[in-house]
Amino acid sequence: MLLLELSLLDWLIVAGYLGFLLYLGLRASSLNRASSEQFLLGGRLLSLPGFVAALVATWYGGILGVGEFSYLYGIANWFVFGFPYYVFAIIFALFFARRVRLTGMYSIPDQLYHCYDRKTGLLGSILVFFNSSPAPYLLMLAVLLQVVTGWSFVLCVLLGAGTTILYVYAGGFRAVVRTDVLQFALMFIGFLLLLLFLIPEYGLFPFLTDNLPAQHLTLTGGNTWQYILVWFFIALWTLVAPQFHQFTLSAKSPRVARRGIFYSVLFWFFFDTITTLSGLYARALLPDLAQPSMAYPLLADIVLPSAAKGIFFIGMLATVMSTTDGLTFIAALTVGRDVIARWGGRNDDRSVTRYTQFGVIFTAAVSVIAVLLFPSIIDLWYVIGTLFIPALLFPLVATYFPRLRISNTLTFTAMLVGFSASAASFLSGRYDEIDGMTHYPFGIEPMYLGLGLCLLIYLFGQLRRQH
Image (cartoon, rainbow, N blue to C red):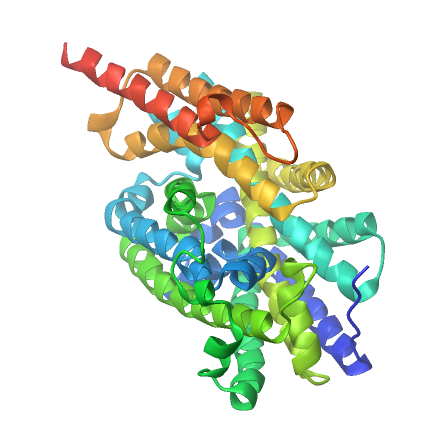
């Protein structure tokens, strides 16, 4: 097993980070006792700086996946995992942010319950719960812990989940935001520090052009345009992303939410630039890595001295933990408020808060199981995006644009068919896997099948409305 060596000073830096993180999260618990709105949305008082820090940090968690992709395909990392998300984030800011904030709802399922019937709201809650899964990020957190401790994978998964549970359970939404502000700063500091050691030593050009495959400096990275297009469709995730909706609902005003998303896009562009550049250096300096997902840790190991290595490592931890805690809280809110409290008939502040805290523990348990069943970051991303985006996209978008709505029965049918078709195609393809190659029915990606059937139902619903 790959094991990175950290000095005593590095370990002190890591311990200091974790201690301060817990302090910030637990301190927020004293501010959340007034009402469930305080615990779930921070009283809808999220300012512009807090909004930007929380959204940037929570939306950007797949640092090991980014390292792997940039190592293998170069600047295609920016084109695949950056550009389409910027486009859809801007679309969300222009056409959704104001509408979302003015609803005064608590969550995506809350909006579905309000606009449709109870069964549609319940199905939407289940889909949102899995779409909010922190499992991919819990897996990355466990991998990062394992490569520096050498402990068993299961122990590292449990340790990562337990740390997240501790302050999210106690502090709720405010704990997420307060810790995200710290983690926002650290994720940038870590990678900027790495480049401060790389660029003066090696320069940019001609070092990179001389030591990289030519395809690494192209937009596609040698991939087909069909493959690139799949990732553009997956970027539709942005429009149904629980993080975007939750932070928008928590903002002081629609203007704060819209401006915050625009600023967030600028920060994502900058962070994508420095992480992609770091991946290029990793490929140039370590051309034969057996584990491309370890590109960033191994690059830091050979470039950074003691202390700097510790700072970079907590920068990676912060990138992953900020997404893990944010998604854990959103999934917990879905379980606690949108399922248990709503269907149990107890919607008082104390009950909603208590049920949401139970949801934190439940979410962590389900995520641990998912990580143990699918110990692959890419697989977890693919499964979540493929199964749940088709079922949520059209019904959720239609809640904000009434002219697009169809009947409750057809909406429920579209959600159920979208999920079922994608799931059936996915399972069939995995069952027919030959020599590691997945063969989906009719050669169609499961996500396309689900989206296509949902669209047909919506077109049928629109025709019925007109007649």
